[in-house]
Length: 454
Ligand SMILES: [Fe+2]
Image (tube, rainbow, N blue to C red):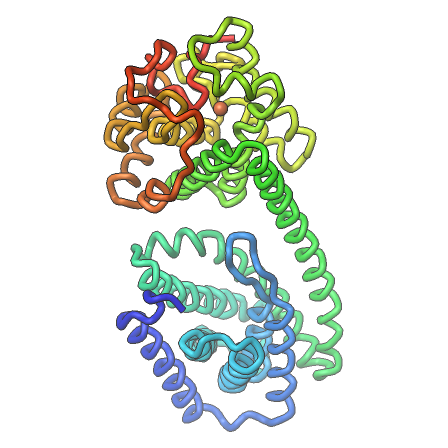
């Protein structure tokens, strides 16, 4: 556990949620009769099964269909039974089996109890009755239950994440739960179906709903696996780059770090952020061809033919990746990472409106890293000087909105870890002399040749 997980505000928040959950269970115990043992055990087992078959999301989250089981349980047996079943399943699965840190187990147990109690109470408030759901008649109560279940859960999780990450709670909520309400409400019909089978056919009939749920899980798992394979494929290529040209690889890793933060700050969709990260990791792959490589380290001016070879690296890199269907968007960004808003970029001399946002982000991050890194015959500029250059060429070379986002992150110190990351100094050792003529335009990234429109 990190220091921030153990900080006093986090501990206080966790204890508050735990006490809130226990208090809710106690209040429900006063209000409702002791639940029967058999459905309690069955529901605990079903919840254990859903927890243990949960899937890790590429964005770092974890998804289960326990919402479906909770909804059905509340409709059939009320929140007291489901609240206790949730707590017991969390203690067994997360505490005993997964050996999750005690703070997290306490938080999740308290939160599940609190969420179930709030959802069940709102369902009753809107006229719903446990064990006797009239599905169309009770629609407002069902929707209210789904909305409260989602709101309590997402608010508490955002609260603890905001304390751990020292961020604004609303921005954490937006990052993690913006589309979650629809996802949670989509669990309602399945919860209703499970409740209907349970109420009309007993617990054996309820097991029939498990088959389509398992199928849905299997399909989703296959989809997640293909996305994670794609990520591994790009990372494997990036590691190959390390063997051939470690400086380009390190540069690419830093550009990817900057670009992902800018893209997140601009609230781009997760899939888009992934494509930008992949493009950043691969953007200079076209430079490691046998023709282009010697030119990168060549001192002095380049001939027109040599410039043409070097300037073809975005096209060469993009051509490699557009053969993989899922990477076509990333290939588009690789192709356009040397385009300029004023149409003086290369290889296609695209003008502002034709340059995709992913490529605009790459351009800013690529140039900033090139300027702040030592290169053969060129000493690195300070980050402050590089920021001035970004401002100076905003609107002509760079997208002003991207520059603004990048500079804001820089001024807030949110790029410091990347800036301070250890770097290898490329050969040959430079002498602190005046930069050669081809470095006259300091904002041109790593290979330093003045870009010519195609
Ligand atoms: Fe490049």
